[in-house]
Structure formats: structure tokens, C-alpha cells
Length: 223
Image (tube, rainbow, N blue to C red; front, side):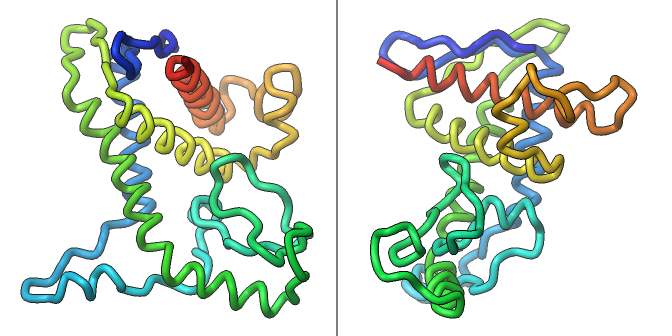
């Protein structure tokens, strides 16, 4: 386990990481990039405004992890709650009491329309955050078994927080970790108390570790 993030003078945060920790974090960030997929490269001679107003998909991703990262903007009352930072959440008229209730068909149509014009930008943002993690780690020298100090600017901290949240959501979805599991934490059972020979154990440990990184980074940024 790495030490916690610590605030640095002038803003930002820093943490000591060894070679193994850097390798794990980098591998997770690269896997996130592979999951999100490459961006649309501009075509030579193409009007840049055309790319700016390009429409994205209208249907939710089939992969449960991607669907967690890019949830529907308008959800019904029976869709379940979301974690903080999951996505747009319930929209106007979604049964939250903020307006007239939508029918299921209206919710689907509104979600599809919202997704068409926002998902490309959301993917680009998540891709940029994961890349920021990879580039920061690539700048460290942890050769010879030594540790290196990773220093992040305030802007880099924000990108790291978003990337860490995306990684936890993805791993949590793959492990089918419920909100109850998170609430019970180490005091509960289930996935948090797997035997060492369980193949899921490394991913559970990564999930918990990312939570520590996320929590201490938030704490380092507080005034």
C-alpha cells in the first residue's frame, strides 16, 4: 500500500510510489483507455466544425462497465441510485419531483437524444483523464527498487480524481460490488473477506487501494 497523498505548498498533492505501485496504476489506466476506446481522429481537409458537432451513439453501451461510466441521463424511479460522480443522474421529469413525470418511452427518447450529443465529449474527457495518469506515471523514475515522489498540480489532481473514480466504478461493476458492500466495508463480509486463493482477490484489493488513493487525494486538496 502506498502512503497517502499529501498537500504540497502552492496547491496540488504528492505521494511516494514504488515500482510495483506505479506498474499497477499504469496498467489499470491503460486498461481504462482500451475500454473507452480511441477517439475519432480528424480527417485531413475535414471541416473542424463537423467534428465538433458530430453525433454520438443513441443507445447505452452493451458492456455493463461502460454503461456504468456513461449512464442514461434520464432514469426512472425504479432504476436504482447512483454513486456520486457517476454521470448526469436523473433529469427533469424523471420522477424526482422536479417536473411532470415522463413515461418510459419519453424517458428513453430523452436519454437517447442527450446521449447523441454528449457521449463523445464525455468519452474524450475520460480518455484525457486516464492519459494524464499514464503520462504522470511515465515521468517517474522508480528503477533499482527505489520509490519516487509523484507531484501533481491542482489541474492534474482533478484529472486524477476523475480517473480514480472511473477505475473504481469499472472494477466495482466487474466485481458486482453493491452499495451495501461499500457501506459495510471491512466490517462486512462478501467480497471484502475473500480467501487469498480466490481469483477475484487482486481486483478487490485494487478496488480498495484506489479508494484510499481517492480519499487521501480529496483530503490533500481540502483547504
